[in-house]
Amino acid sequence: MKPTSTLRLAATLLSAACTALAGPPAGAFAQATLDSSALGRAIAAVTDAGALARAHWGIAVQDVASGDVIHARNAEQLFVPASNLKLVVAATAAHHLDPAYRYVTSFLADGEVRGGRLHGALVVRGSGDPTISGRYEPDRLAIFTGWADSLRAHGVRRIDRGLVADVGAWPAESQHGDWQKYDLNWWYAAPTGPLGFNDDCVDFRVAPGAAEGAPADITAQPESRAFTFANRTRTVAPGQSHTLDFERVPGTDSIYAFGDIPLGTAARTESFAVRDPAFYTATVLAETLVRAGIRVDARAVRQTREPVAGALPLFEYRSPPLPQVLGPILQNSQNWYAEQLLRTLGKEVQGEGSWAAGLAVEAAFLHDVVGIDTLAFRLRDASGLSTGNLVTPAALASLLRYIAATPGQQAVRDALPVGGGQTGSLRSRFTDLPGRVRAKTGSVRNVASLSGLVRTGSGRELAFSIIVNGTGLPAGQVTTAIDRVVRLLAAL
Image 1 (cartoon, rainbow, N blue to C red):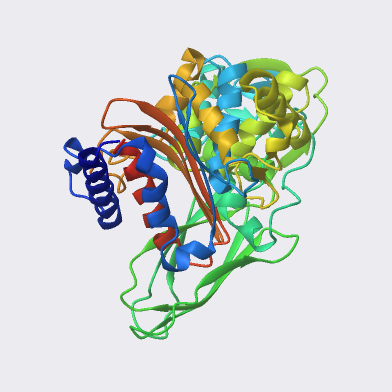
Image 2: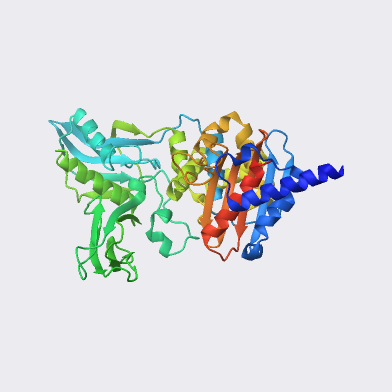
């Protein structure tokens, strides 16, 4: 290399590395580029700075078009991936299920409909639909209200023997053995099953009370007999400790809030997981039917795992198509959607809606279709909540290259959060690189990760995976460093 070229490369390296460390303004990468031969040193300047050097970094970068390895650091070592693991269930689903795939919830009459009266029970047979909520509707109960309209259209004004929740489509398991006990109370570890509603959570709006000493202002949505709630909280002076929390009486549907909330605290919503998804769903549905003018004993709810003999079909409800199921998984990192989809894959591909079957489908897809060595991953769940999940950055980068290059994976690519976009987990990140970064975020205790696709200044598309374990640092500090690495990739 000529001396002038060496000086030019050194200047480019210094400029791009400093820009990445500072977090550049919009448009900065329109002028500056970083030669790939200098990339390793520029990345090391970020990852080996101060306390970040004590963390365990895994980085893999591949050129989407050629498959060339652009950069690798501990790329073949196993890491806890956190929510980056959701890329696996999304890509597996896109491979096995048609983009038009829809869940079907069936309604059957266990008795004759005569004179506006169902002389028997209404059977609701679930297939695992995660979308029964207000996510794509005007409110949480809109789908249930639509079901009430369908019942009236079939001549049903009264149901004599209540509702039967048919949950026989999947095995009885509902919570993963790897998940922590406290986590089981919350939306990110909500129980799974064939019949669910509102992400299997009760949404509590929490705000301070009117004055010191008053209970916090807590309202539940939806209100239902499916659970009881006790408010044991206290409003305290501004600046005092915020200790408000929720708990469940073990083995019951009794939820209580306790602790203190300071005056001036902004209102927020806490999504608390229910204990029994099918009972919760059927009870809230029965209550909605009553409000819609259909007579039914809202307390007459039971479950079955066996088909109700002689029950006749009334109507079916079909979910939004597969791409709208992938959206919450990748855009918002909704764990429950990921686990529901995993068990769906087990049912659709192997005939059993269990975690074991779903994980086997994922493993076969990674090895047989994408070509990833089975030693490069250890799968425990779909969401990444289990710290028993392990994967190499090289495996995730290869998966992302497959996603980018495979037409059948377009729904996954479209569902990835976009840096600086209007929605999703990257909307406030990479605002200086609008539209150039699509990636899945990930975070659990002492783990931060980001895996996705980045368009370089020279127009190349790169698949990358950056996983940091054993951070021992505030999450924001590690995330900032990860973003600086991605900016260096964008400068190539």
